[in-house]
Length: 630
Image 1 (cartoon, rainbow, N blue to C red):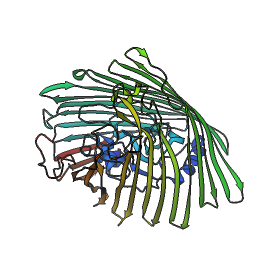
Image 2 (image 1 turned 90 degrees about the vertical axis):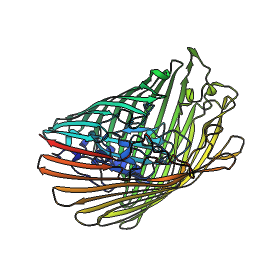
Image 3 (image 1 turned 90 degrees about the horizontal axis):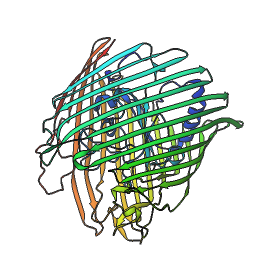
Image 4 (image 1 turned 30 degrees about the vertical axis):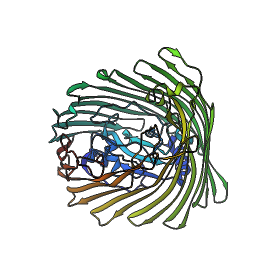
């Protein structure tokens, strides 16, 4: 049982480590999901790393420790953190909480910390699920899905702890957690409060406050039946400085979920679930009032059975209904209701070779209202098949190869508003669902105390919307890349983890067959493509009480090729953090961290050959923190 606050150590763990213990009613589901995902790539990051590297913005910390995430110019600082996974023909991947269907939130514009919807102290682990993931997660799964696992009270006994942090940038953060469990029930709750008094340093921020809380309760009706309930609320209020005036911005996010797992027998189980989210952003100075709400109901039947001697089948069938409701600036009021049937399957031969296959059919409906008037149905396709098949095989005891072909899809609801009224123009492409397909091969070589993993992929996105003379046209975006990860226990006290991502090529092709290079969304816009991304983490235990760690990220630069072939290059950057922890007693720890040791301020925005303007940008920051267990 865990009895310590999560921020105590910077704890590197290999990707192959599984999460918290699983209730008996959920074991078949866990087995089926694990077998089905065996031929896919994923990068997993422990919650302790998230909280130490950036305890306010979890996606900033994630970039240090997971390959697949694309960091574009300007998003490399402490406030940002991209959600694009391998793909350039979208605005970010969907998120999954505790493995539930994928959802998207309304972000907070303007500046300051984002990605605050869940307190970092409550994060058990985060996983970048790579490649098309439509069969399992649905919408927003073009290049993958970002999955966050919340801590469970099942891992604690009478636990209470607080974590305090303060920085030289006039920031303060307080987080707390309580948890307990019995054979029948368990609970976990966390709260977080942040305040930054910037006063123009950085120059676009006056102040920011973030208040959030989360509760997760489990009830075991019997060894065969378990219910779980999750509730989370977050209020993010940055006051930004724009054109010399202070603009107040307010973002609110609420999440609620309930699931029921029931084991029918040793080979079958059922899952029923409801998920609802509400996210809103208001920026009165710019007349922005925007929201994204999700309501999803789902059920799954999980099964496992021997087929023959040495052959085991694991599979599931399920159904889902999902509604996305968006409002934008008093003009748009849109609903997207989708229905889906799906199945996942994996066959394992002699505990080695695994063949996987999945299929999903989704039926789409739209209800678009602009300026109070209901718009004609402009869906180009009312239904879509999504699929996946793959294989993995250990050619040696610790050498495993894998290959997969998988699709994803994206509703792209943001084109209603982000592209003006172009999406309503009947002379355009209408509302075409963005479809993607991922082809990937990979190799994992393990050894005692570590592993190295390689992945080579190609992803094609079709029907990506592009503005064209007041209408929407469809663009195909073809992208390829290479990723490598390594984890090593160098000594009993020193562990290392590193990642590398190379975007080999990105090419956009318009509907008329014209190749426009990196020009994807509208005329004159060109996407900056990172050339090479490196990350390195070290964790050194000086003694059992004293620990040192470092986290580094390096980008070699960016290249943007416009429709006419003109190339714009941007400089790369390096970001380095150092940290230390000391457990003065069994229940009290002190922490120190130097953020951005090298005082980087540009983060890839400067065009090569131009002068970098460092004025008004936040550089090196010092942090002190403490953890107390009661």
